[in-house]
Length: 181
Image (cartoon, rainbow, N blue to C red; front, side, top):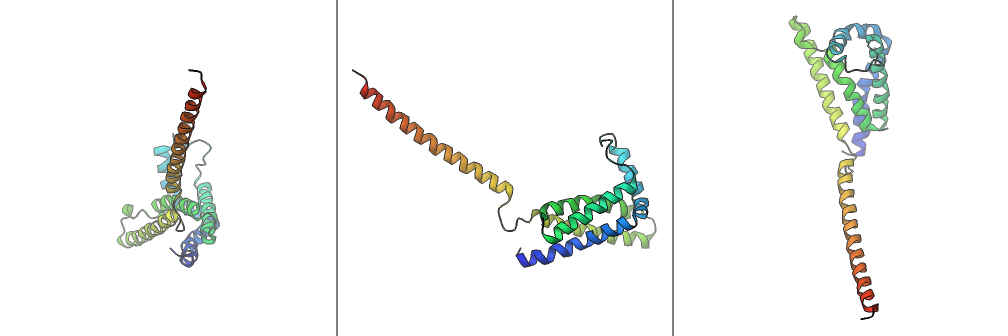
């Protein structure tokens, strides 16, 4: 991906999250009401493993999610820690999508179709975020660099070991010659 493409694509991808986060902050109670069944269901299933310091109030959770969307969206748009920002946005997008666009629970065909469209729009956004998470700016990934650094260290250690062995052998021969027979 070229620099120009990144500078154009990141703000386009981030815009939805920044505007959505601002909207969620402005209308937190309405968003919380829509998300409440999902939040309650999630805490009913995994609430015993979630630390008690984690808020369970839907309005508070919506506000936290909104701040994450705004902050990570701005970071992605400006290219500041874009991989981390994209990962945070992806982590925010999944529960938002499941809580607000669960089309499979809707009986009305018209509303079901609208929510299905929104669900797949969010799935498409998740695909864009996955690309952003994996974008290394054309540089090798951290895992690749770590593997190659380990190889280089191993090779250097082997070379050093061989040098030390040769030096030790030379010193042993000198010592043997220096000893009286």
